Length: 305
Image (cartoon, rainbow, N blue to C red; front, top):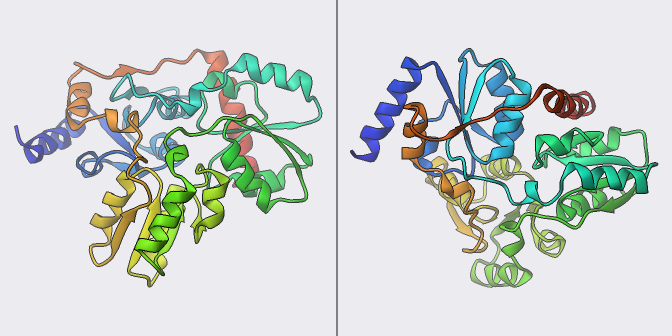
């Protein structure tokens, strides 16, 4: 079976089996082409909630599928590759958060959405990379404990100097592979080309970039820019997607090492097998965990709009 034939079969199965296919932006191009919705984890969860289909397949990592289930408990939610986990989401658990709350009772605990549903039950609010600054500015408390990504946290801290931050020293192993040397090499090789990075990169890398923002922010920057060349400092699938979206522009990866094996684990055949009931895994979350996780997501919506 060719890629095109498999894509056509998936499109047919979506209609026959009442399936909404969600595809995170870090997935491969062949999967993006058959998606109902693409984007970041939270945006996809909202799309799923409002979609008419009763069955949802997430092409991404497990915490993303969990977020879909939290917001759409009445729907059946599947992850296309059951072994696709986010390493950052596994760096902390609920027990650690509860211990931090006892140690720092006067701090508001803010969790990156890249965390498990169980952990979310123990925090005050969660944020996305695109909403973190706005939400934390709207928190009345001036003491913030940001978990788990200290790099994203320090990027937020720089923009909200009036608040006191503490961090758990976690982060994204993929983005941590990008170094300041990569930036220096890129500037020498591509002088006068804008360098766009994700704030999950080390703060030393972010400081050298022309723009730092979420994946959606990076893609919007390119869309709205008159520049014709860009160096991209996030998961390298974005380089490929931007090449397809803007064939009149050129894109270069900041580091060839910025590849997430968990995001790349899902294949087009995984999607097909999940639709056929021969692969993937259904996401099940007990009511107490779902309600606790939804509380901090609802708080995010309240503070971030």
